[in-house]
Length: 300
Image 1 (tube, rainbow, N blue to C red):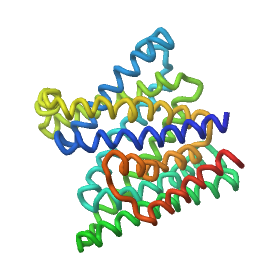
Image 2 (image 1 turned 45 degrees about the horizontal axis):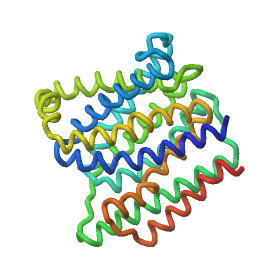
Image 3 (image 1 turned 180 degrees about the horizontal axis):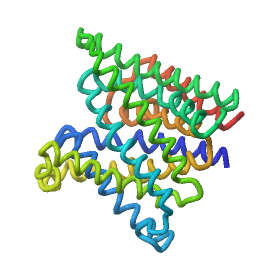
Image 4 (image 1 turned 30 degrees about the vertical axis):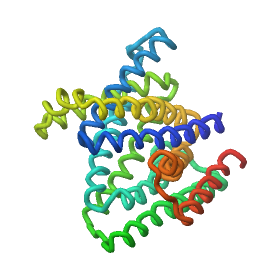
């Protein structure tokens, strides 16, 4: 089961490397908050259909109160709070630097899992974590260096770095709550509970910011963006989140988080073949290092 969990974590990273290709285009058109809201709405209906077909139950009414409690917290932390800090970090220091801090999520996850769950990682798993994080950081730092060389500018923002760090910490916290909540419960229905919390949280955020009419009514009229959100939702909050819960259920939270951190590396092929972006040698080497680290979880 340990390797099944690791495989699910790797599948999560694959899904999360495909979804952003579609979300990026939609975000430029309708904004990040709108994309975040509608992607979880689409995911809710996909999960409801899956629950009906697999369990004969479109909504997780059989979930115990404990499961609801922890997964609601996980959904709010992961989809609402963490993304708030992350997207603001994108604005302040750029996505490349923000992603570097996301590479720290496995370390935070392993630390929190040790403190609250008593999970201790094996030496081989710690080695794999170190190699994966090293590879990911090589990739994103090389991209940032390329951006600086092309623009001749270096953006510095202490607030942006703090936001990036906080986003990574909240992401790790949400993952630990997911592991607690999904224990002995159906993964698909567990994903649905997290999505419900996200829908309520993001809708509330939209209303507070005065963007309710634009997001709830205006976005569906943007057909191209709406279609991209729908496609991205299949890979992101539907398959990706479901695989992530499967991963934390069958393997240690630190292991799952480390393999999920491969997303910035796995996104390289789609950006080459779909977005037609060029890849530099350091990015390729970083990808090789990260994939080698991921292999340690399967081979050792």
